[in-house]
Length: 115
Image 1 (cartoon, rainbow, N blue to C red):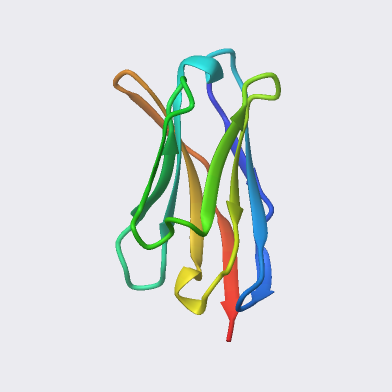
Image 2: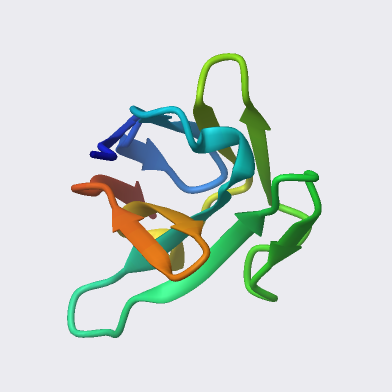
């Protein structure tokens, strides 16, 4: 059984930074592709960033140069460092784990950026 627990969300002013964390239970973290997604009110969930087991990263165009995804396999944790936040980044951020055809989601953490 895999459980993903996000933390680090909150309220921040435009231009500020936040660091999200996602701690995973289970022993499969090191072979999983981890990702962060977000869903704003009235919008579909969208991909923010992913990181492969080999630490290859990919980002949505809207966050390139501002967000950084990283992982610590010793802690079974994936991070999302978010800088230069704008009100358009306001959303619930979800952690995602993919291992082959299996996929797991966290409960989400709210990020609100005020102007």
